[in-house]
Image 1 (spheres, helix red, strand yellow):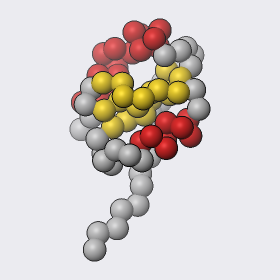
Image 2 (cartoon, helix red, strand yellow; image 1 turned 90 degrees about the vertical axis):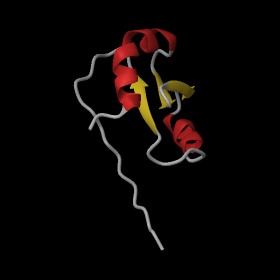
Image 3 (cartoon, helix red, strand yellow; image 1 turned 45 degrees about the vertical axis):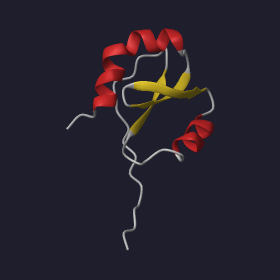
Length: 77
């Protein structure tokens, strides 16, 4: 199933690329809540959010035709 945040990104992709050129954006609840050129800073911010509630996308001016999915290990006790 495609995430609502990803659908938001695809719908607004051209506008987001203009607003955040060559930056990584973090989308949560269909809003850009953080952006930076440094991917590590975006990942650090993402650690403050609940897993599975956001996506990180690169707003590259170069067209890409792939999706990367990252999985993290979760331990339930």
